[in-house]
Length: 534
Image 1 (cartoon, rainbow, N blue to C red):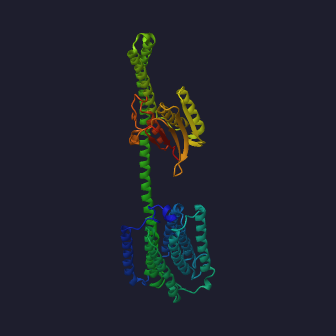
Image 2: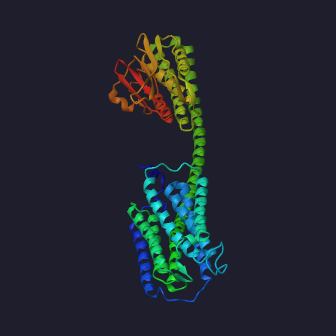
Image 3: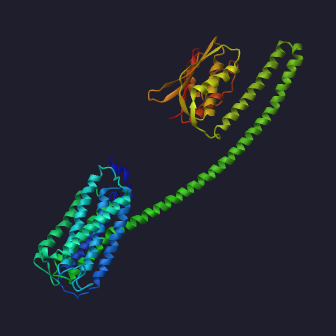
């Protein structure tokens, strides 16, 4: 995809493809304009009353239209940043400046021969420069539009580029105005009083060709955008404008003179109208999007407040249940110990076994309550990520596990250095504590047991950590149940546990954007792997 195609937004006229509806509308406008043109042609030379006030009214409307159009196009340039858009906006600035000079030099409007040292040829030549300059800039726009598809957006500051374009357009208009006034003696005479001279036909025909070439350039540069389509309508109107006001008529203040300038004003209005309509549509979309965003934000805030309240209630409920469950457990465990201490020597082997089962069961129940509370906290505890020195964290974890299993022969090995990781150190330590503790539990029957903690790189380059043991292992056929809550792959009378520890590991790793998995063989041990995200 070309850079500009990736950057432009499809709802701008400069990038929106022209659809069938837009084509039909533009064709209808051209058809109506052509019919009016054909109807006016037979009367083009009909002389009408001179209305000097028509010129300033026409020129003022034209200048205002062109400047507003240029401002809107410059606005689009600040977003799409293409050379073509900058040139097109400059074209409208150019026509506005030339229209001002044209009005100032018009004979009889502000002075008998016009201002700025104008002579009898000045206004007519400014008209020629004006109606040749705009089509040439449109041709440049069409050529640059194709080249911009393979170019990166302009890097120059938008205000600076826009200022340079305005200064350039004014400079070109000023030079042409000076040529038409101070340099008029070097130009062929094309006006005699209010009538055209024979030389006028050849010159105006050349100017007319520029408008046709602009139309062809736009047509050839595909795919057509909505802006291209309406620029073609503009060029058609300019063809009609020049034909009526400088080719088919005889001079000033005839039907062709007035009708041609009406076409010129219509041409200036077409693009302005579609740009204004586009702005209305974009404003409506923006308002709709803003309203939707506000509703979504309010909904999120409401849901967040509800979730916070639910979490507080859940936490209070969890601690309440924990307290209510621990109270009878403590009583049962306490009385079991009293029986064992006071009457143990009086009980037979079966009685002592039953008391031992009772004590073991209360301890298991207490551990289950602790695990369930830890599991319930996972969804509420926010991540506080920072850099973690994994060698140090693993060392602390192994020391804690060794203290808990004091008296058992287990060899711990760290394949380091483990390097640094990014995560919540408290939660990552809980992952390691559960995995190393799990490994220690299932190496109970190995003398000595072996637990290894290390790191390696996956084929894709992702860093993973592992905890490996030489314990009981398990059948990989049941690996899908490994990280479920209360899922156990060994009988409870073989190995103690609640079936919650690995579920906690799974949730903590997922909260870090990582994953956890295992590989094992029955009787040969197991290896648990985990990553901590990118």
